Length: 387
Image (cartoon, rainbow, N blue to C red; front, side, top):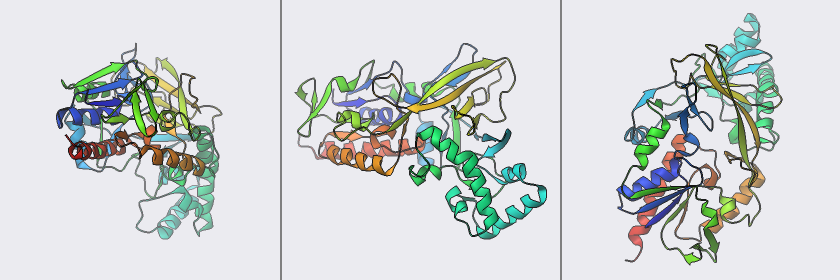
């Protein structure tokens, strides 16, 4: 073994492929679960519908080089994701757009508000809800407050388990307000889903004679850190170790636990043609769950009936068999993370990558870009190491 990768998701698999293919290294991937693809894992349920076990995933990017990389390992089909939210019993598209204004205002008020938005934010296609709340125009502020009170604040409290005031502003900015009737969820030039499946993509990505994937292995039962040195079952390690799990657990919670959110999925199937107007719909005003994903629409599948998952967010706790999905970005959690990051930098052969290890709320293309950057970093390290 020339390199060890912990985790068989996108980060780990991309880096493993690079080490095996470009550098000729023998790579072992340790995966705690019993499958490849990490949280992108998909499969056909008993009704013949392709579903995503850990929540909906679509690949989107503005960067051709990232799209081209994905195309190396499977065929993709164009897919423009549409989403929505149920507010006061009414469906409206998200990101909120001019249709949302039409949905909740009289025709005269709606035209007035749209004009005011165009004047205050001229030459802008989107704005954040924070900008709208801080607008000079009182009608715009009122509109933003309506959305904040009935969607953003409620969804944030459920999804993240903290108040909107505590959460990092970057999270609230992820879903903008559109100043048009554009109803696509993303603006990126490349928006695709695999023609076959994400698992097929990952099988091709990890299909290399220099890569060995071992399932059911909890790396933290074997890897320990002492005096800024990595040890494998008590033996000092000098090979590169790429770690994609929760960074605080790697360091045995030395500086305290980092907050991650998990999800519980309630799977349902109905003999109806359609459950909801869009593949992914948020339900901010519901007490317990955040959203429903209808998988026959993600991508579109010609099948009878429909399978969907209701998502219930919950706190991630070590040992309760839940999976950490999202880092909770607050001022305090960022301070704790930086302590772990500084300690990790003292270990020359340790490389962190991915949402959990980097403690960042990455999209898939950001994960890929980060992984490719780490590939170059490892390559430079190996090249500079004395023979």
